[in-house]
Amino acid sequence: MIEISGLTRYYGDLCALDHISLTIEKGKILGLLGPNGAGKTTAMRILTGYLAPTEGTVTVKGHSIDGGILEIKKLIGYLPESAPLYQDMLVYDYLQYVADIREMPKEGREGKIREIAAICGLESVMHRSVHELSKGFKQRVGLAHAMMSDPEILILDEPTAGLDPNQIAEIRDIIKKIGREKTVILSTHILSEVEATCDRVVIINQGRIVADGSTEELKRTTTEDYAISLLLKGAPEGEAKELFAGLDGVASVDASGEDGMMRLRLSCRTGDDLREQVYSRVKTKDWALLELTRESKSLESIFSELTQEKEG
Image 1 (tube, rainbow, N blue to C red):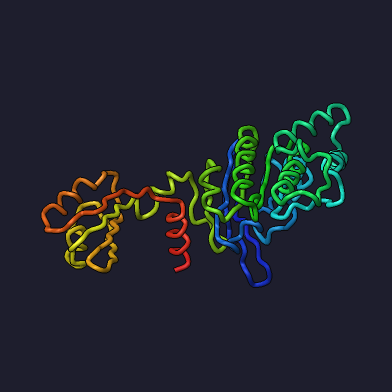
Image 2: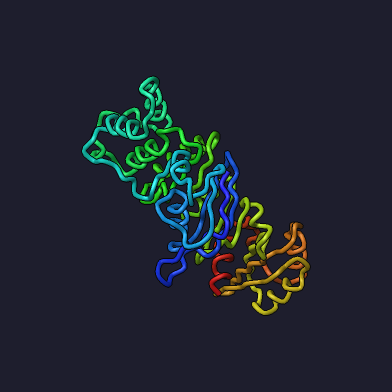
């Protein structure tokens, strides 16, 4: 549905996007993940026609941004990081106003507004002024605005920024519901947001794509599949690290400890569960084993590994 090829954008001498190429399929929730300043917002502004690229092309459903940007805008609903709302209007009046701008047919408009209000959880605030609303409800109004013309594509830039945990969960549920029928591109630097919401993850760092795939696929492309953590008593650090470093499938061993306690973290690059072999090796020593756990690899560790590697 969306084809991005060689997309590049400079601000003076600063390269915000560096020859990004990407295909986005219909009916998926794609998460653009990256640290602040990675280029996520720039990419979204180009997709929505707010910025022109320095180089490269973007095609949306056969329309190029070079000559068909108006047609592309008709296909897209956009929620920027700070929803641009008219604060003095009632929520209901504001949505009516948006419907007028989008030239929605009068017939069936009322039902459509009510439907979108229900999806976004706005029924209880339809007759309140926008300025009276919490940030969470304002984000919902902005989301309703983006959805008003029933676009095929929704582009959401940091939709949960500044919200409390309850509001984040509510917005996340709305996005997942919308994603059943539409293509959603979600930008964020909140790792848990992507893991909980998105079908596919694209990690951008310093203007470049450093990873692309599902969370499970990303786990298989990085240097650690999982980790084993164990807490030992009476284990000398050097001897303990040497004991496990020779175990097939262990990529590295990190150790820290004090007062006779030693915490070891074994980074494992294998599909096998090595805990039984670790336990067997501990039994050959006169050490007390206090903990032995397997840690599933988190998106946070994937993100850290990929971005730090590129920065280095």
